[in-house]
Figure 1: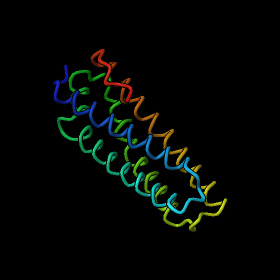
Figure 2: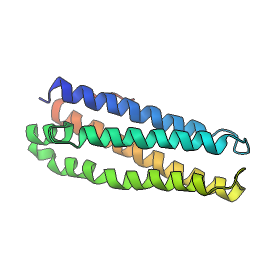
Figure 3: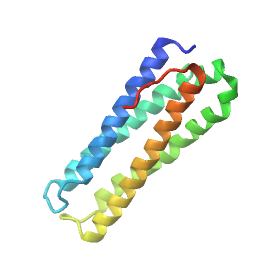
Figure 4: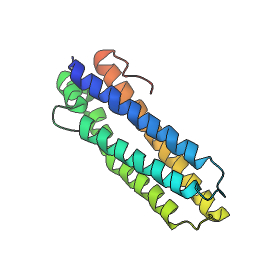
Length: 149
């Protein structure tokens, strides 16, 4: 069984990542013609980037939850590799969203808004799928729910 420390760290990062995802969704759904829309969205994406990096540094480090699960349940090695493989594309998607917001006009054109919304939607879906795989990964090893947030 993974240590309570590893599980608690995974739960904490999972909650922080979820909160950052919700903040990005909220910022993206605010009125796009507002003078602050881009700034608020950019700040939310920056926070999401930091939460993702913290998540990666915690779960994908030697002795982190991925290593612990694979050590305790070697049958889940492929699932652990998949979780690790998700990280770089997620980083790239966050960077693409930040770059799209940075490049948008102020106020953004309808085309800019459409592109930004599509990028963010794809990012949130990818993060949600990653979080679900992580939850299933821990459950398969320990029958422990690391939380929906």
